[in-house]
Amino acid sequence: MRTAPAILIHGPTASGKTDLSIALAKELDGEIINADAMQVYKDLSVLSARPSAEEIAQAPHHMFGHVDGAERYSTGLWLKDACAQIEDIRRRGKVPILAGGTGLYLSALVHGLSKVPDVPEEIKREVLAKVEADRAAAHAELARVDADAAARIKPLDIQRLTRALEVYYHTGKPITSFQTPEPAFLKQNEWVGFALTPIRKELYARIEARFDRMLETGAPDEARILFERKLPADLPIMRAHGMPGFCEFFEEKVSLEEAIERGKRDTRRYAKRQFTWIAHQFPTWTRIPSKCVEVRKKVICSIHHAIDAAN
Image (cartoon, rainbow, N blue to C red; front, side, top):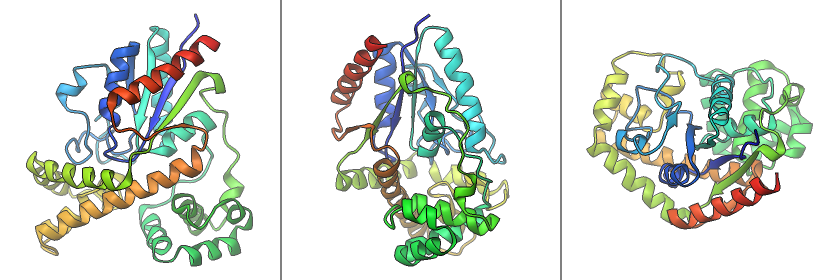
């Protein structure tokens, strides 16, 4: 049985991936698979901007809120779960729609997963702080320890620069020594990728407004419940945007206003890194700058139908 290509949607946080994926699922008889590293956790529905119960009722959703916060859910685990979902959706003649802001997830799906060791969260934070403080100096350091990686990675590519340095800090070996990927699950003609690229100033305003809505819909209470579980601070879930600031507030180290501002700032910075990822890691993906769901849907459906017919 011929199967339609899977649709992959990446975009910065607050760019409207949820509304778009639901619209596509309705139009194409598709099912949605989560590709966001924080929306997998059942402990965070508000702070991760996970689709609401009303949104989930509009189309089949998979891999949202299925992981306990105490688990270190990795790219490898996501890939295993996502591949199983894709196979099941295709077997039933539906279109898999993978949407989320974690570019590494989608990259692993279509390019293969490199066998790079997991890096402790403490090292990740240390390296990210160093890169954000002085990208030129960080790139020069990478050139000293991994000239091959430095030749491929530009100083402005914060995400790849950080990844290369953190692997070296953790293993003492260059990241290039680990970068022979396993075969990709989705072959070239089995998927089509789209990147949402809204105007940054407008996106940052959306981020601010969404965080304010989160405060009104229970984010502080959700954060406190998670905080009271006393989970290790280096778990991925404890680094969700908003959590570090709220934890400091609960520990009476900062005011609520300071915690909120940190949450907004961290989210804006993350969005900036996501734009960089799109530019450097998904150069051939179709860009969709429009913020209109109908326009986005028409663009994707048109290209998807053309590729499906060509197959």
